[in-house]
Image (cartoon, rainbow, N blue to C red; front, side, top):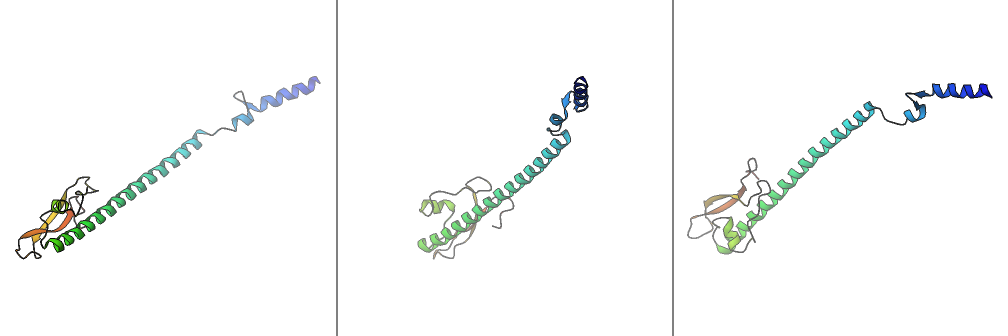
Length: 142
C-alpha cells in the first residue's frame, strides 16, 4: 500500500506544471490565439464600417435625386398653372406647391442652386428659374 501511494505522488508530479494540473492548463487560450481572434474582429469591423458609410452615402444620393426630380416637376406645374416660371424655390413654397424648402441631404442646408433662364412660358417674357441643382461639390450634374 505504501508503494501504491508513492506512485500516485509521482504521477501527480508529472502531470503538473507550474503547480497546475495538466487538464486545467489546456482549458485556456494562448496569447497568440487571442491576438489572432482580436485581429479578425478588427478587420471585420473595419469592413462593416466602410460598407455602412457607402450605404449611407448612397441613401443620401437617392434622396437628393428624388428631391430634385420633385422640384423640377413642381417648376413645370407652376409654369403650367401660372403661365410663368417661378423666380426661385421660395416662389414654389409661397404659391403652395411645397410646404417648405427641402434640406439638401448632402450639404444639410435648405439651399439650392437656382438656374435662371429665359421665361419662354410667359407672354411677357423675362427671366425665371428653369432648373434647380444641389450646391454640394460633385453633385451639380444630378
